[in-house]
Length: 124
Image (cartoon, rainbow, N blue to C red; front, side, top):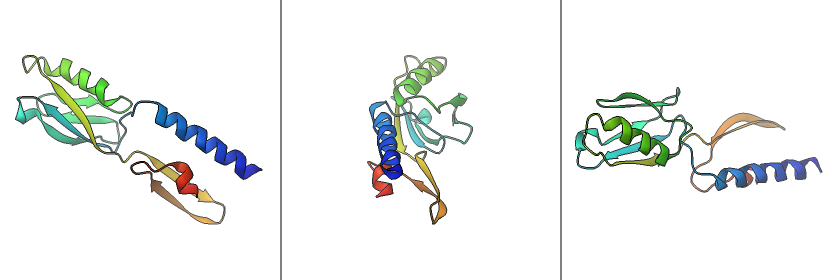
């Protein structure tokens, strides 16, 4: 019975995560593209403090925001440097979906959920 309850709880959590827009997290790799300005179009990694660093702009908080929210903020910030910037933020690699496993006779480990993998698939 305890296993069934835990499985249902994990399914509820993963369903909730899929229903929401993706939020950028520490460790993610992003591709920032500023249309017509190749000097500002760069790949960046989200640092453990949740920030990214862009040329001419410096540090910008990225963690906890969706790519579209980050794009809007970068458009506003880059408006001081570029006339009418068009900024696109693409998540190139997701690495912040970590699962910590311990107890139950298995060695402690950290696993990454990649792509469409779910917590249920990991437990199976």
